[in-house]
Image 1 (cartoon, rainbow, N blue to C red):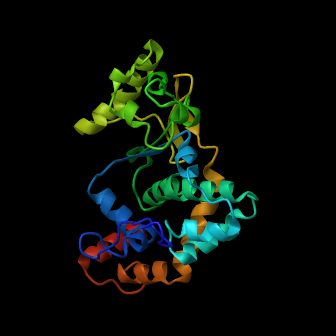
Image 2 (image 1 turned 90 degrees about the horizontal axis):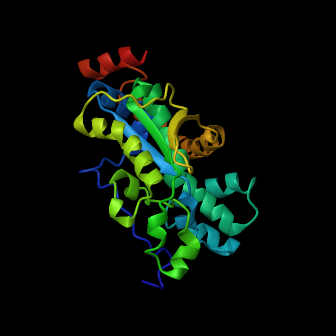
Length: 268
């Protein structure tokens, strides 16, 4: 295992349980159309310090950068991302961390949300969030070397403490009050009830702040992360994915059946 060039094993698109064209269907608007007709809702977001987890083990040399990224992405995507991030990053570890953080979470969640809304899903049904409130009690359960990295932070996946209300780690009174309030619309979402998330546009998110407040925020990172999303889309377009799928689902050219015709009218 240690001698493998790409030792990280990732899930595959087997074209049975998950279609190999899933990315193409997202870009084409087909997924958004089906999402909308099924009256589905999406809760999607991020935590304040996503990058901390991805920095662990980040390569520090240019020779190791592309192989490191190829543990996550195919070669054409990795190369395009390096070319894009070289404009704003000089340090290799910073570049790797920025790329993986953005492509695993920040840019792709925003792009997916935008594509859903552009495909006809109501923005109120795409409930975006950001959690920045660290839980002080979890720090005390960490080893000193872990505490040095994670103390006072909300790293990738640490928001399970908030969503699952893990009070036993030791919420302060302020944390407990804020998390209870934060979870009120989430509980309605789980029960299938109408949810008032508070946002009025897909470029906004509901924010649980570091000082235990809940705010509706106009996304300050939207523009830069849409640039990253555009890099990913260009790779798909260059490899023929988007155009091929648009034709396949009947959004360009002659429709194949009544269902496609109906979807085409909605899209138009």
